[in-house]
Length: 135
Image (cartoon, rainbow, N blue to C red; front, side):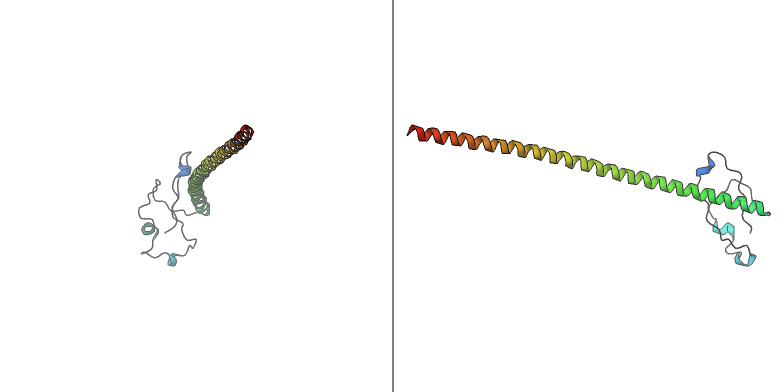
């Protein structure tokens, strides 16, 4: 059975799901009645009535429409993948920002602890000197 011709796409038809890829052979022997296009395409509905593409131009238009449908499907998949990976990158950035903040807090605590230790050592030194002076 020759490929079916699709109507010219409107502005919203560009992102509709693609049809299954057909073999490029045109011999009738390769298309038996058990594996006809209708049985392979079970569940896939087209908006165009059943018409055969008899001319090379019609077949070319069909191939171009299939290519557009496949490109739209690929674009949709890539956009979904981009969104998913974008969310993963955002989560990683948030984690990195949190770790950076934690690191800054730790540095600040270390600085405070170091300063406190020096002050305690200084006060201990003064106390020991004053105790020695009283003797």
